[in-house]
Amino acid sequence: MEKLTTFDQALIELLSENSRESTSELARILGVSRATVKDHIDRLVENGIISGFTIQYSDSFESSRIEAHVMIKSDSKKSAIINRNIKKISEVKSLQAVNGIYDFIAIVKAESTYSLDKTLDAIGQIDGIEKTLSSIVLSTKFKR
Image 1 (spheres, rainbow, N blue to C red):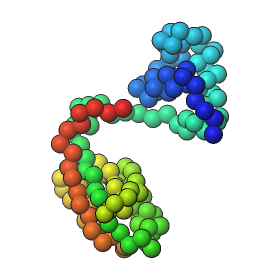
Image 2: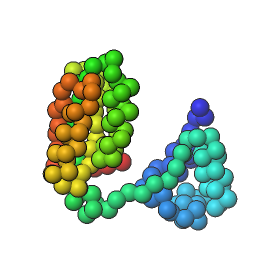
Image 3: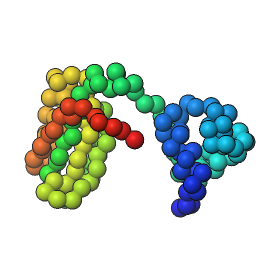
Image 4: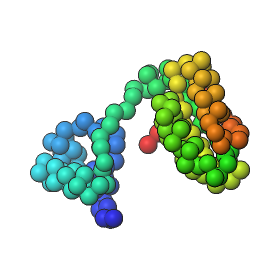
């Protein structure tokens, strides 16, 4: 994999903050030409460093949703089945394998406590999941 330059890191940081920022504005902020910014973005995409551009929700919208971190203890022989089934639950935004007492952490975002409860029930019913422990996020102090 290609090593990122300081310029590429700065460009990615700006795109992470606002992926809709114009190349002209990115060029102005970075002190280079628009063509330089475009070439770097194209190269980052071509080399698979950037795989897509996405949106970020506003703070007011995000604060209306409920986020929970769900620790999952599982039968290690059923990890592939668990991964496949959890991936089908749209409220689960990510699943990480971790070390320690629990095997996975699922990040869940739901529209209501009712929806969160249904999602947690669905996760708990997946074959191979032995135990879950959920923590509801009360607030996010910062996000990068």
